[in-house]
Length: 120
Image (cartoon, rainbow, N blue to C red; front, side, top):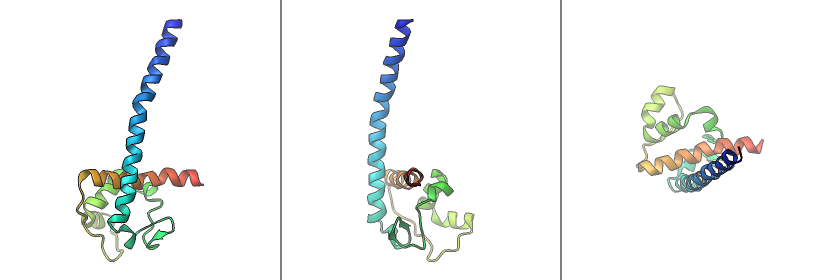
């Protein structure tokens, strides 16, 4: 009995140890996404918090769209505009981003859902 408790404790520590680098990696990805949001001038058309164009708020985008839908808006805005019958002008432009950059932007926008949920 004591041996199974000890093995369970070791397994728990192992799982936590594996999760820690992923958490740091996620934080790094989110920070890169935040930087990209600014450097790609997304704030010309969109806002987060009080920064940017209030006509295109993204504070709650992750509550309304899945991560995959957010990714599609970034990768192929023309198709998403047609699919969602979006009429906002000017139309979103196709960004020239690497897969890692798109992943970072998606991670940042999805992270806003958690931030907004804790702010309530």
